[in-house]
Image 1 (cartoon, chains in turn cyan, red):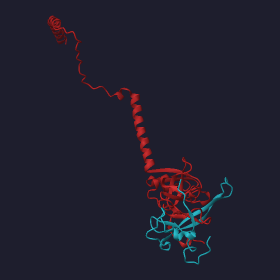
Image 2 (tube, helix red, strand yellow):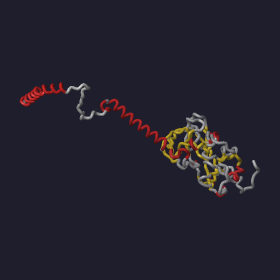
Image 3 (tube, helix red, strand yellow):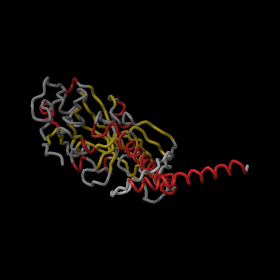
Image 4 (cartoon, chains in turn purple, cyan):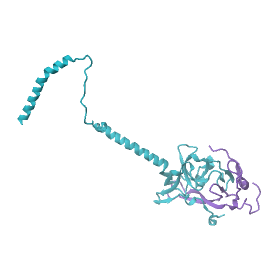
Length: 95
Length: 224
């Protein structure tokens, strides 16, 4: 199985992104605002109606996920970070 | 016709008559006590091949040889080049239908070689060893990604070396890395590069991840 990894809230993303996976400091440091903003659209789909009814249809709601692509080696998900913790707006209360 | 036959017979008889007393004499004088030396006549014509003498063995051998050859080549092609598989399940809806979608898998991407964020991959399930699963890659080693679905816990994790994070397109119906954690890249078997939908009877490419793949940000998609 995968090794244990520590989870952290989006408020720490700006500092955590300065470290690579083995714990060493990233060189050169990255600025997430400089990286290209990317998106990925996922869905919440479910069957609308009874299960074995031929008139039932699968209905999907889109879910937008945002990423910052800094290089081919580093992609950071910033769905909960954009416009909240990125420094442009006044920082909200720590979760 | 009768003349040469007669002369042949006569000559043979004559030789026999003349030579027999001498040979008898010689044998008596040079008798040896050891085993008699026998010289076999050399076989000038080669025997037919063994398999040609037994037709059933021959047919069995041919069928067996080509059957094994065909099975081996098919195995190598399906394991290291391409394969076509029928997918099943709601977890990749709407990119892949719940049933009736054939996927073209490229095995060049096995063990995570050249896989990028946004690709759809096929991997051996880390919990159930006999199941293969198809999900979308949202993070590669060193990347930072949401541990759970968006708008739930908001916790982020950094993916360790040699792992990736896979999430199905249909978030509530998918059992993926949100359940079993980062996926070892060694379990990745292929990348889905195309699909054939039997309901629409048409091919579509999934080489860049399809409609749900990684794209530059478009503010029109942002409804919040």
